Amino acid sequence: MSNDKKSKLIRLSKSCLSESEKRAVIRVLDHEFLGMGAEVKEFEDRLSDYFQRPAVCVVNGTAALHLAVQACQIGPGDEVLVPSLTYVASYQAISATGACPVSCEVDPEDCLLDLSDAARRISSKTKAVMPVHYSGGVGNLEAVYKFAEQHGLRVIEDAAHAFGTVHKGKRIGSYGDIVCFSFDGIKNITSGEGGCVVTSDEAILTRIRDARLLGVEKDSDKRFAGQRSWEFDVGAQGWRYHMSNIMAAIGIEQLKRFPEFSTKRKELAKLYDSLLKNAKRIKTLNRDYDSVVPHIYPIRIGDLPDREALRKRLLDYGIQTGLHYQPNHQLSFYASGSAPALPVTEKIYSELLTLPLHPDLDEEDVRYVSEMLIKELNHVG
Ligand SMILES: *Cc1c(COP(=O)(O)O)cnc(C)c1O
Image (tube, rainbow, N blue to C red; front, side, top):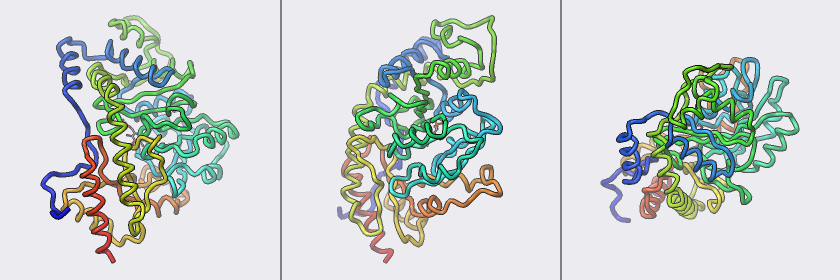
């Protein structure tokens, strides 16, 4: 490509919406029932079909994680193992219950929870482990479950990045203890904001269905029937975490379009891999994009003196980049005085750079981003 400067901005990520989502929202608005009703019920039913087991929809992915931790009756005095390399949502969901997130290292090859490091951080207070399916990959998930079984821990999967990923022939969410997804604007499917919890545990499901509606017992069934509870009991702390019909209407249409999104994301990531694999300084993540549906495309760049300068030059070419994620153990709220340093995570973070990935990009965009990146890295010397 000869012209370096592109007139359009290649966005890091974005929502991809068609007329079908817009029409679906208008139908809900015309019907004038915006709260949790028929559309949320339909979205839950479609998700339950998709995962082949019950799904409960909530207002966002953080709420899904928070309710999952709470439903495990984890709270003050308890600890949850979580990789530091995640969005702060994972941490806030844990600390919202009063429990303490215990920061763990990730494996530099795949940026997923390092179980040998997690094992060293287990204490008598540890109640659960929250693996984060960074960028859509899940790594050796069997080992996470074996580890949890050995130590008597619940597993709450932060699958915010992994909607659609298949592992050993099985869809993420279709099995496992408790699996949480996010449908925020830029995730693999969106409902505007939104999220869901998927599990086969009936006690957990009941607690979450009640807790999303201020703890009002069995209110979910009433709302799905277009009614409300006027007289009821509340047996536990709840929140206003239910999904609205407007959100679900978007989510239903996005789920129908998911095969198209999934194919596109995988193809673009494969193309990035093939273009960048042998480039100087660049290390691509260890992911098999035949089965992983990538939410983001992060790479690692070794020996880079000034990442911000590189990002600025890429932006001059119209290429937006991101940083996923600033380690959470370094945030004031989570950095306890005695917290051990996480040298592996800190090193990885210093090398990370996320390249644009969303279904509205095409092959030419990915070739352009890769070409400009390689060109800039050659100038670094
Ligand atoms: C997006 C995200 C969440 C939370 O989802 P929201 O819907 O934004 O609340 C949790 N964990 C990770 C890793 C995420 O990327």
